[in-house]
Amino acid sequence: MRVFGTLSTLMLLGVAAVRGAIEEEDDVLVLTDDNFEDAIKSHESLLVEFYAPWCGHCKSLAPEYAKAAKALKEHEPPLRLAKMDATAHTKYSEKYGVNGFPTLKFFKGDLDASAVKAYDAGRTADDIEKWVVKKSGPAVKVIESAADLTKLTEANDVVVIAHIDAATGNKKDLLEKVADSEDIAVVVATTDASIHADLESGGVVLLKKFDDKKAVYNGEFTKAGISAFIKEHHKPLVMTFSQEKASQIFGGDVDVHLLVFSDESKDYHETVLESVTEAAADTKGKILHVVIPFSESRIVEYFGLKEADLPSLVLVNMGGGMKKYPYPIKADELTEKLSGAELKAFESKYLAGDLKPTLKSAEPFDDSEEAVKVISGKEFDSRVMDTDKDVLLEFYAPWCGHCKSLAPKYEELAEAFSEVDSIVIAKMDATENEIDHPKVDVKGFPTIIFFPANDKANPITYEGAREVEGFTDFLKKNAKKFSLGGEAHGKDHDEL
Image (cartoon, rainbow, N blue to C red; front, side, top):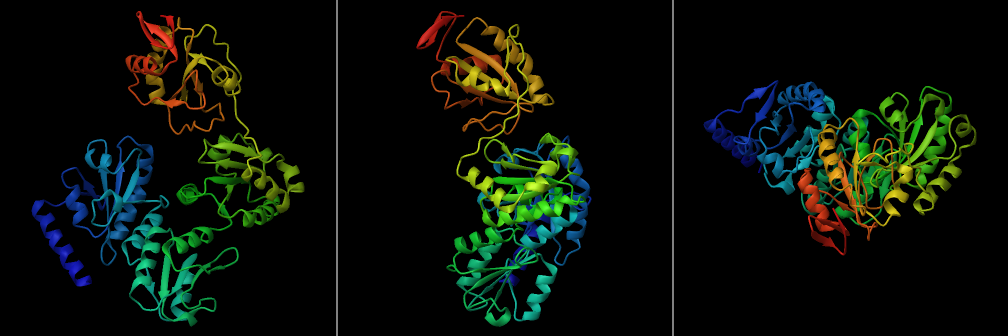
């Protein structure tokens, strides 16, 4: 089979050569809409970066990506990286759902979107190289001795070993599917259960360099069962945030995070970490515990913390509108009073739905002379939820270019509806204000949401053209009551 694969690759390379060599920049293949399919089909594996020339993150990634490309090109057999300007060549960025930059997608000779994997590791050359090597090589290594296993455990933080009946067959195939889908550096198989003391016939053991060092799987030998076991045990109980680990931390299946803001150089750090680790063992799989070093200033500032506030704990629901639940004590008092038992109780209250989020709010603004009403977080209930008016609310950020472009059109819309008492055109600075609504999750700017007068529990996200005409048509269709130019809309009508 391997010979056939090599021959087929050589044949495909020959076809590509006839159609024209692919241009390279710094050892990275440069793809276009015209050569994309040939590039994918002529490489057994290929990581493609979809980028925009103006994107700052893309520019930061470029030297690391080039460094990884050079290293991978020197592998035996060579492995390649590619890139595509998704602003100039849109066919495949649209096909594969690229909606941000940079986006990295991994192909294994298959153009079907369901076969494409998203890159989910760090942004250093070393991270990229290791990830591509793992995804390009055999998913499962078959080992024959304890010495082989020792070499692997010394070189890797996590190793999953499984006992199988034969080096080929159904169990090996199942393991390969597990290895291909899970973020594990090494999955190995053996036909000799005596290689490890905890490995039984048909069993699986996860070996790790942290926490309790190992976990033994006692369930059925199924993809779902083994995958769930790996997800539960392959990360430390408490992780430390870094830019390299960001995708691993925030890209996982657990949306609820207990963030531990701490200065690792201070005496209090180990004391706090001990209590956090104790609590983490109880809520593993439900809450992810992450240390945010004080050196990660952007994150610290986002949560409004200063050095004098450390250590501080904040429970955050990443998948629920970034709702925050600060632990009630911080700084010196936290160091003195925190215990694993008390933190467990706090987390249990959250899981039971007994905690209310702390919401940030700017001070209310006198907008009586403004066409576009300015709503603060603390006014959201009174001016949006508890009013019998239809409210169109823009969530914006002061630095957002799209928001700045929208501003004059939104102002014009508000002026046009200024005489319609039943409709409010409003905005909220989402960097300074937070709200608690189960169906509002602001993930980008501007986000424009309509709260119907008769159904505030079911707001509608505006997805039409950001033009006065588009907004007007939307309000005609969805507002409870108003009239334009004598044409009535809704159940009751105010003349405009």
